Image (cartoon, rainbow, N blue to C red; front, side):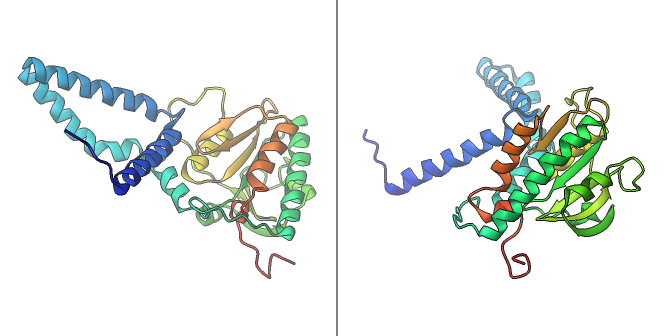
Length: 269
């Protein structure tokens, strides 16, 4: 018996491999890995029960698997949401390789300002939450706070998180080179595997990173440590050099879309 492969078969295999690879990346280091292991064990036990003729056990397992089909979209909701968000982002399939010099300059100013302010807040143990909006809009989050729409400056950002400021409690949202909102409320993560050492700020940052592609910088009021939340994961502690490296990687990339806006006549000025 000879097996022949056509060009369509090869394309089919490559597409499946591509999708499988991105699914693995999506669930890597998340609770979904343990759930998948449990499902694999369930399928193995069901197969063994079927082979041995254990009809009652097999019936129960098949019923459980039928219920799992309905439950899976609910269980994997955060991972599915992040996957769809990534697919919908500009540049996911096509690399737009041109970069406007004026946008590049604004990114550099933003990065240098953040790298200057965050250690200052950290050294004084002033808690802070700074959200950098990227592809996914944060209009609903903005509506929970105070709209500022001010040009970014390190001095303004620092003053917002001073204890005597009426805006210091919530999160600051930065869009492009503007501080668009302050005192904003972020959704708390509902994950049960979060370290007990992480407080409300970290849980809020993690919650927003699970629902959007935003990058969130956290300064702990208790320890002064700087952390970053991105794609449902927290990296901590971050030294100024590490913070600058990560921000440069994410906000000075080879595609304009990663900065959060496309150059127009308005933002060229």
